[in-house]
Length: 356
Image (spheres, rainbow, N blue to C red):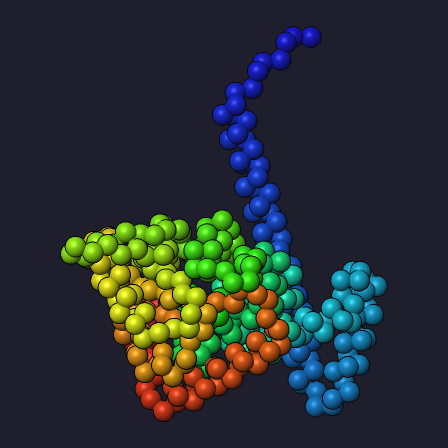
């Protein structure tokens, strides 16, 4: 028997890539087909039930159909599963939207999203999950942390929220309201009692990967203690990031105290310097994020920070009572929407980036 020729490493690498790509494509296609099947089954049963005005008919038909399908195709079509498929079709009635989402989201992703009561919240998680390609575990963690309720977007009127989600679905870019949150959960840093601002910054740098996960996909760390020279004085910006979806620099200042009006002037100086000296061609104007231990909402509103491209958010160094946090976020959203209802709605870019 002759001696086997030694395989070319580059050949093996290329063949492995071809096999892995094919496997991924097969798995993705199978997942999409299965998700669409479940949607069609749920939609067909839903139409059958709606065609009959008797309430008890719906319960009976699902149970009857389930027994037959389980016998023919297995436990995947048990009564509980069929009801979830009907719920799926009700929660996501647009087949084209489901078809697009199913290319990135598995059935397990949708199972995590379906229990959410608000339609806009479901749509938000589905679209962000599609764009950021979250695993099921990551999606579950984001929902548990009340991510949607913590976004600036959730505090906008429902018509604006729907317009921004539709804009994103049509291929538009993410907006700052989708990116920035309040509060930020920094309990994973394990900060001791009586920590200093330097302790906070050092802990973030030590666990930058998790910090970036909390900030959201799209952030890239650029610098710490960024030196900013203005005239004869040197200033130092705590953290500098770049956000690829927003196409802009993001300056982050860490404050142990509650937000103070003087923080605005400091951040405005940093942003103007970055805009003049660091902003590249094609980028949007830099945006600032002041992370502080707390903030008086009335003060923040009166200072009109949005006009200066500045965001203020609280950070939580320790795990909060999530039920209490959820109630606080709901109240904040209600107050924000009540205030918005007395004025004009913000402009939302269309799919081409034009203002509507």
